[in-house]
Image 1: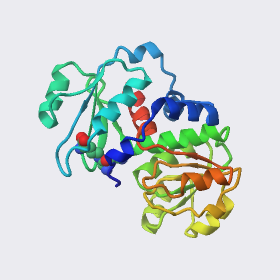
Image 2 (image 1 turned 30 degrees about the vertical axis):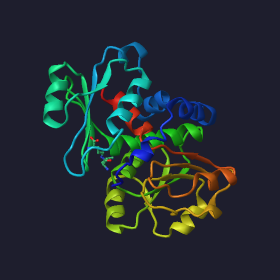
Image 3 (image 1 turned 180 degrees about the vertical axis):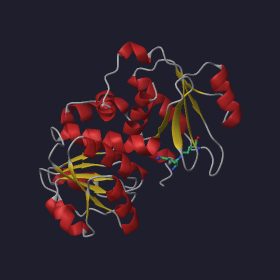
Image 4 (image 1 turned 90 degrees about the vertical axis):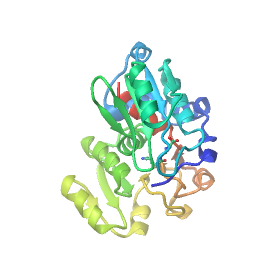
Length: 266
Ligand code: 2YJ
């Protein structure tokens, strides 16, 4: 799993990203999250929820700007009462809980969750990231129903994307270097699996890359109909390469995943 760096988090520019999304897929972070979850949210509901982000020091420790970035994204969506706790870890958790927090975000090296203390709903960043990027692709291509979608990587994020896509009638092919993992997902979902990535890239314009593999997608496969939706860090293809060929790249470091978690945790 990729560990975010402060430099990655410094790239977050919410207004600009929302503008980019609205221009290219006619939906912003809020609409993508609603689509991912199949819900419509009343804006004023968001203002009634108290959200706290608890920094966690375990394992490799605090990532500078991580909690603050989560706070900024959640606040941007319309959750006015959102802040990072003064203390970290268990102390921070009890601080948030005693403060009456409805939703508590926290992440260690393995898990990143949003827990609703009242409804007991627990959202997982991996799963919600997959759903969010699948929803973004759904909006970008005017509906995934009956369309052939290539999902690269069948981890937690890939599984979330597959679950979303299959439910909406997409024709999904999964590529994963781990053939056993791919077979396991094929048992759970009505999908195809295939182990020749070059052939798959040659035959798909709609791609969700859920891997942290650099250069997994060669620019020669990109054309003006290509849409790549990917949370992968590092990116599987350079943004400039996609733009040069006239394709669309949907990518961010944290925004879509956190937005889906926040709305899903209401
Ligand atoms: O609170 C902090 O500052 C740190 N403990 C944050 C750690 C963030 N964790 C990661 O980036 C891990 N790679 C796990 C993320 C799961 C994403 N699906």
